[in-house]
Image (cartoon, rainbow, N blue to C red; front, side, top):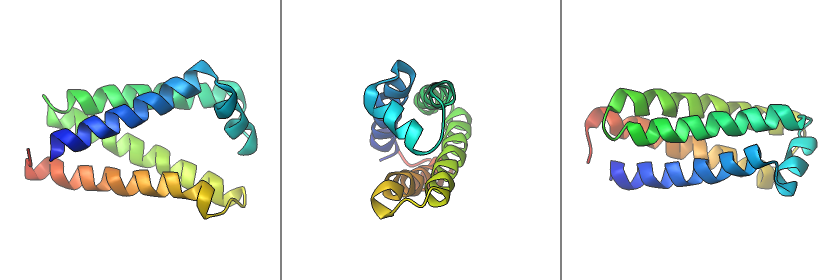
Length: 115
């Protein structure tokens, strides 16, 4: 279970991080929507890429995956708060909320050693 969840999270955050770092039109529009400049958004993308690598390394060293997941939970909490402050509705808030829930599930599975 943890391997499948890890691979799904790695894929998701790799795609999101690459899109932000590359400065795709859609991501730059999202950045502007929440009041971030492109440099800040690209840095968030770099953090997502590093965290994805950390999750992957967590398959070998669980503490690395744990640290990466905690970092991503904090990042998603920041996204959630940013969307709330921006007055966004459920459609904009849902991705951060769903990813946070999935990451919390991941954090629960790591100490249990579920494989």
